[in-house]
Image (cartoon, rainbow, N blue to C red; front, side, top):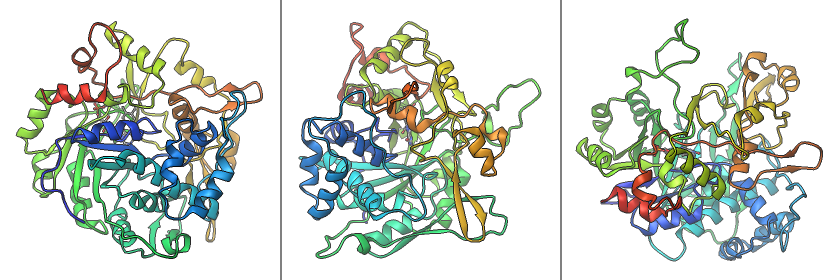
Length: 476
Ligand SMILES: Cc1cc2nc3c(=O)[nH]c(=O)nc-3n(C[C@H](O)[C@H](O)[C@H](O)COP(=O)(O)O)c2cc1C
């Protein structure tokens, strides 16, 4: 493990599901900054891209570099459709993450992560990271192995307190068995449930050397940063300090009680992290959430941050995987002063606040999302709960209500919950089509609140721009 002497000033934030794909990360990385691919649900993204036929052959090119061809053949046999599936046919689903996962699923996870990082790093020597959510635990260990096999330089993790990950990275870099304590709801007896993962059980023969990537924790409070620095199982090599204007999931507001007159919790003074305390921890750090401008970069550097992490400005550029019609519509609505972004405190099954765009047009509306017939068939945000002695089950507050309640979940938790898994897959053009009258899954769009970069990168009302334009503007 080594900290790079001079770390880049701009990190292109990981954006799930699949928005920050290998093309975006590669473009950013080739510009001398840190490009980050999203590792969230990357196994489903990978399996669906294979079912669409891998038209430019990039996935199969990456796979031909994976040292275990038998594993590649098994995964291609299971998911690759030459020429692609027909548009009206549903995607074949991959198994849902579980405590006892089938070998074929673990192999898929390893390969999906390997391919995304391999392609982002292919043909240049820039720096590439991968982003995961702490809340999604079960695919994490094989995911780390897959991305390390492709030489990932950084692992970034938010949406939780990732105490166990630095130690897991240390273990995997020596090909040792690693483990992760699972978060279990309704665990009144405080039983311990552990996901064990032995890399040598899946890969054998001549094992390549693995470099331990640097680990950056994404945090919103100096208290969490301090506790991570003290208690993590290995070294935390840096922090991304993200405020509540950022896209995707946000930390919940701290110590603020809802008053009778407020319909939702509010962020306040107490949610502003103390940068001095974070600086005192002596690790590199980057500031995130509305920092995509030369002035905000300077502000961050003046606070002795290494730089900034930027999401939204990259999320809507040409290289990102978001559907072009969504990017165009959101940028157009911003330019016309009509863009509505809100923090939804209920939508995400994780329980964390989630930023959403309310588009009132034919692409997607929040009204249509609330009318969606509940189906849970991807299951990344299912929470493990204790079913009894040494037994766990899984439930998601966005699954059909009667099922959730039958599993002991509270009816209140199901209110206004959205299926982020299926919605976010649709945003990158990989949404499920169902054969019954359900039709196609609708996109869910998350962004940060700050679009002030737009006039600097969108010229002559042509609503498209490249990641290189974003970097040129921020560095101008
Ligand atoms: C479309 C989108 C998806 C995102 N998804 C994730 C994610 O999966 N994991 C994560 O840690 N952060 C996610 N983020 C947050 C970004 O990585 C970044 O930290 C944040 O957007 C910075 O604020 P900004 O958008 O104002 O630049 C997402 C942001 C956007 C815009």
